[in-house]
Amino acid sequence: MTFFFQMLVTGIVVGSIYGLVALGFVLIYRASDALNLANGEFVLIGAYVCVTLVTAYKLPFIAALLITLVFSAFLGLAVERIVLRPLLNAPVISVIMATIGLSSLLAGAAHMIWGHQRKAFPQVFPSQPIEIGGIIVTPVYLWSFVIVIALLIIFSLFFKFSKIGIAMRAVADDQQAALSMGISVKAVYAITWAIASVVASVGGILLGNINGVSSTMAIIGLTVLPVVILGGLDSILGAIIGGFIIGILQSLAGGYLDPLVGGGLKEVAPFIVIILILMIKPHGLFGKGGIERV
Image (cartoon, rainbow, N blue to C red; front, side, top):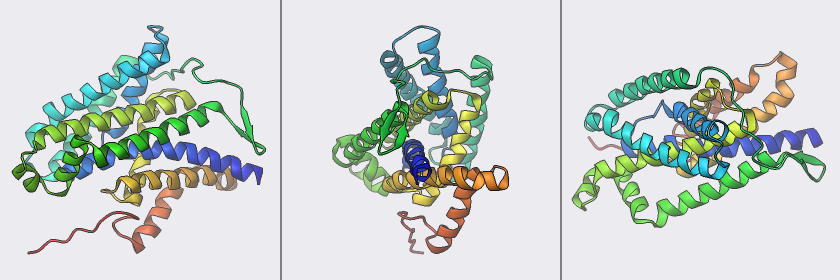
């Protein structure tokens, strides 16, 4: 049972980070009905920028984090203005293809600037493990979980009560109605991409503190895709709960099933579960099925 709870704790922590990164997917989809397939590269670049500021320029972690978040926000704004703004009225498939090209471009830029070597953050969180009921919890896991939960609460309150958050929800529900009420759809798109870039960077920084930063980190873009499909592409709550489900499934599959089959099942298990769930709920656990009148 101790091993089970150890795997469960690991899954919850990693799943919370998945949920945070998945939030960026959901925001972009709600605003434009398109998937941002470059989300993994936003995670990668945010992590690389922060670890470079800490290791190469010797900045304190908090200062490096704040600078990285500002950089990520401007990166999101630049991507929306240069790449996505010209495609505002284009078919959804054109936007998706643009994000695929953007993914390759950002990955190539990251490889040219930082290479392929794994970079490690210096000790940021305490190193002394914490024992809770016989379960050993590394402080970096505990702090990552607390930070993610705090951010998810902040973003939930932001979307529900702030003026910008309400405008984003209005555009997601009906662009024409939002325009008629004087809401700038272009401005909402820009803010959405900035927030999506910021939350991806935070996820990358937290994962970098756990496993180090390398080019393989961009694969989280594909790992998180099952999260948003499971929870529902248009559901913020679904992204959060889906992140926990996928994180726990991966951890348990890696701990119990991988040793039996020689490895690899950890990455496949979430997709198997998603197929089973989508057979029952095609729009995900919390997604809303669209109804069109013809």
